[in-house]
Image 1 (spheres, rainbow, N blue to C red):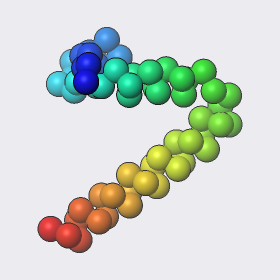
Image 2 (cartoon, rainbow, N blue to C red):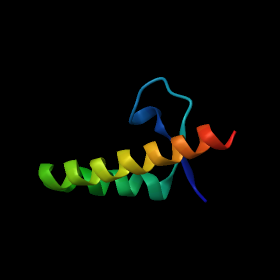
Image 3 (tube, rainbow, N blue to C red):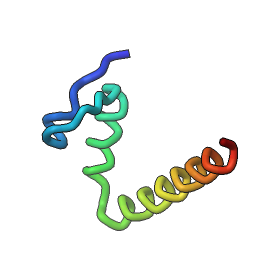
Image 4 (spheres, rainbow, N blue to C red):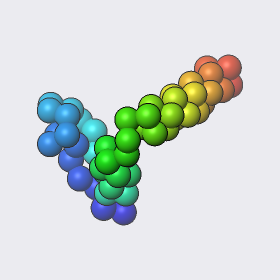
Length: 58
């Protein structure tokens, strides 16, 4: 797995992103705004679900 520093995307962070993640982010940026909004809505809901599961599991 190849990792790249995210510093060039978001300054002064400690995150390392997988190259596949960066490619997906770049592809998402090319989508029409409405499609990006739908995609982010789905991703936000999945992340919220995962955080809720983690909160109640531990």
